[in-house]
Length: 365
Image (cartoon, helix red, strand yellow):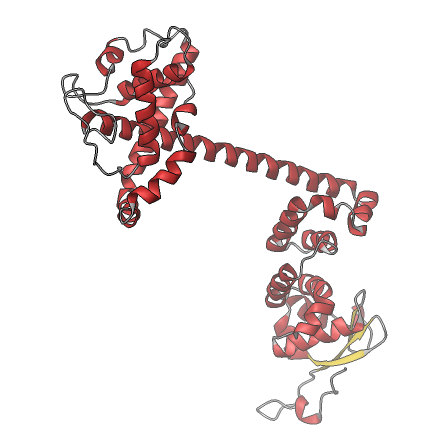
């Protein structure tokens, strides 16, 4: 396993001058590994400073002790200094030790390779040990990967010997890990809530488009009062939302309870008309959506308190932003819709059955 001692030719440079390049690394098992001064010094500034240290601070024999790790790990370390490579077998057996050596002796290329290899070899059983080492060796990529694995598989990690050892010997690091898990879970919940809210705003934006489409052009069963719906008209591109709105408009027109009578479905439809009026930019004479002019005239008067008014204004702003975003994505949506138009009824009817009146039920005021 040890490299051969330097030959006489190793001690002569290109100009024929004798050079003192021979030095030995001594491992914890007493093994001596001969290396060249210039190669060792060029690979690590730490080793260079040790080699160039005044002789009075070290033994008369030119040796460098590297202890605390297995002898074969030191051999692999020296092999990397010479060749710039480590075998998969060496990395699998001594990856943790090589990372520590690369950090202590400042060999960045080896440290980068060890980090990548250890990330690929992370398991539930070794993640706590690797995490502690990544923290000590200032390996942020490896540290973050370990933290994410602990966070995602905490119940399994909690049963390992590494975690139990950490609890008994480093409670402050345990607290750091638990805080990271708590922050990760909080971010995940905030992100999930944000996605749900954005989904609601986009659905309300689509509902506004469908409402204008129904009241202006007419759809399968509902249309403007001065236009008779065509029975053979094909479903529109937003049939799942449009169909639900048509059913709700028909209910709203024929319901005996109405809003004041406590019909929940009518109240939801009433709020959709009100939302349309809040974002409508058309003149009163041009807009064909029912109750638009009425709500514009009464805007702000129906709010019971300032908090409710601010909440409504925020909803309106979010829907306006969602409509603007949808318009930017329109070219992509058109391509998808063109593919669906090959069989619009089969593509839309199934979705309509599952999503019937879905948008209206999600409106919150």
